[in-house]
Image (tube, rainbow, N blue to C red; front, side):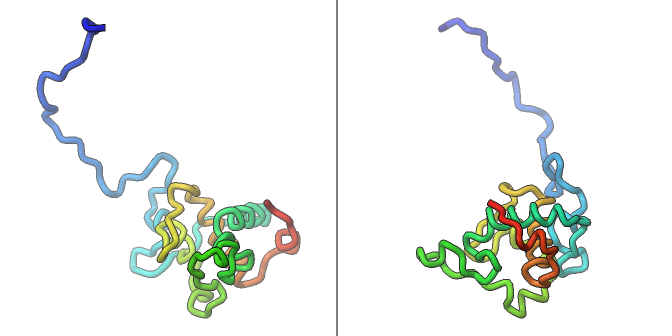
Length: 154
């Protein structure tokens, strides 16, 4: 073991390796409006994806898996962890939140909000937009198809 071959550098690399702050992971969108949920001129972006009714069912499942624990099934801030001592999150039905575009919910899920942690590394980009679409369309606008609203998801 003492005489094993080793690789030792002769000198430091002549060029520094620098990465730009705009660098994104493989599979992420390069458009900053889609990636960040913010418009270049300011404000929150609209949803860049066109989702179908089947996608809404997936959005409901994702919402109940990741969000309903704190926000509650209907988004009223009455999730299962509130009686256990977690601070109550703001209701989605609050008029200040109700009028926000889908980019607001995407931005909050991406970066965290208050005590809420960031889900950027846990939920892929398109699925975060899908959750935002489900929150806006089904919980706030109540324009959800009946088969999605009545579906049992786990």
